[in-house]
Image 1 (cartoon, rainbow, N blue to C red):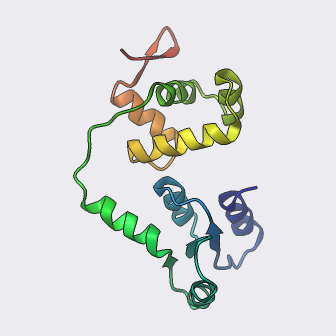
Image 2 (spheres, rainbow, N blue to C red):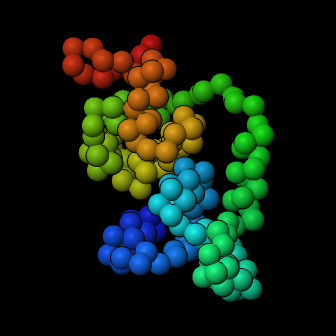
Length: 159
């Protein structure tokens, strides 16, 4: 179970919805966005010092949202950048096409001879590149941008 799944489980199980802080190695925007959407109040990288962790735990307990310095700087820089043209790798397009067909991560991994963890990485990159927060949004975005299209009730890669 990863931090996001655990957060969902905590939020469902405990009616008082305790403040959750995540300590992780993941620093990609899609993962951080999903964590914040789930109500995570603290997001720290494993490179944080003990002092930073203690401060963050106290702040989260006091109701303050705490983001790792590197993560918050990346978010700030992302907001001020001009959007770049979308460039997807061949593998990302393959993953996106299978997402559009409704495949699970495990099914995509099997189909493309990848590990499920590698598929998660591709999906995370796709969410970031497409600037969306979910698999469903990624598929909708892909269809609207004609990255995949419906032909004979099956999604195919657009050329």
